[in-house]
Length: 165
Image (cartoon, rainbow, N blue to C red):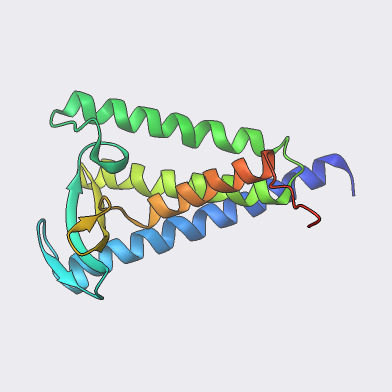
C-alpha cells in the first residue's frame, strides 16, 4: 500500500470516528430537549451519583469564560472552528492508531460543541456526576470524547512503563 492510500485510510478512520461522536452527542442532546422536554434548570436523578441536569453553557469547558454577548460567542466559535480545521491536517502525519482514534474523538467532540454554539447560542450540557453534595461540573458527550481523546494522545506520547516486580 502506498503512502497516499495509507494517508487516505487514516483520514477516513478519523473522520468516521468524528462523525460517530458528533451524531451520538447530538442524538443525546436532542433526545433530552425534544424527547423528554428538558429545559434549562431541569434535573432528574438517575442514580445516587448521576443526575441529568440541563445547563446552557455559554462558556468553555466547565463553564469557564462565560460569554453573554454575541462577540464573545463568535470568538469561541472561531476558536473551535480553528481546532476543527487544524486537527484533520495532522492526521496525515500520524502513524499511531491510538492517536488517530484520539484525534477523531477530539474532532467529533469539537464539532458537537461548535454545532451547539451556532445552532443554540450555547453548549447543551446535561451530565452531572456527584457523591452526595460533592459534585463535578455538568458536561456532555462531546466533552467526554474530547477528554478521552486528549488522554489517548497523552498516553500514546508518554506510555506507562510496567515494572518487572
